[in-house]
Image 1 (cartoon, rainbow, N blue to C red):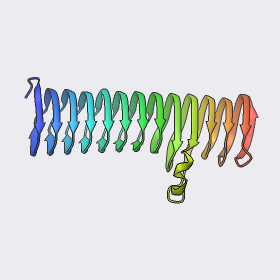
Image 2 (cartoon, one colour):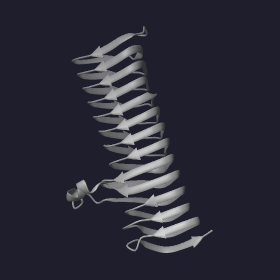
Image 3 (cartoon, helix red, strand yellow):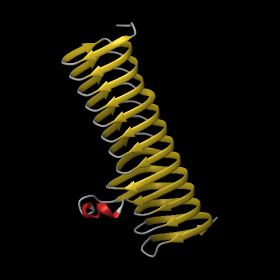
Image 4 (cartoon, rainbow, N blue to C red):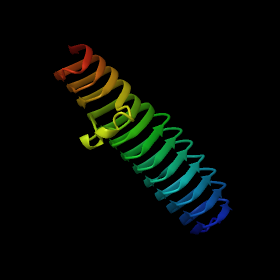
Length: 236
């Protein structure tokens, strides 16, 4: 099993792990140790009792990883649960991903649902759907289009944009509360809508419609929409 071949599970099967070229799970598979591979493809139901290191991982079915997930590119179209940390170059979530530890990536794009128990760090973070981050969301550029409930304990970045999704989705507003909740936002250029925060600190701040903010501290300019509720703002 330690030879660099392919591991393919089409029905129900198991493996002791090891190093492979390609790992494919089309049925129900259990891998009882760490695996390393160029490509990991799960179309069925997979359980990996260890760490996964893959150049490219595509999850169309459901997978549970009890260790870390590391690699170049990860796409989640189905359901993925990683009990520890994720460290990749690019992470794309069109399905549902739950991370028990931290996430570190160069680029994160979300159109499904992402839950991270600890911090989430990236150069570029773009979300067009729901997410929940238990710690700090930290990225150079943050672009969030609200659709449903979004939460992060703290948010930090160079440019931060938090806006409502296109008017096309207005029919669903009554079913999905559309708001981002956070304790603290800090950045250079901050432009937000439908955001509830205790403190915002930035250079250039644009507080848009339906925001509930305790304190805004700014160093250059501020703009506050008439429908926003800002308890205190001060130039520092």
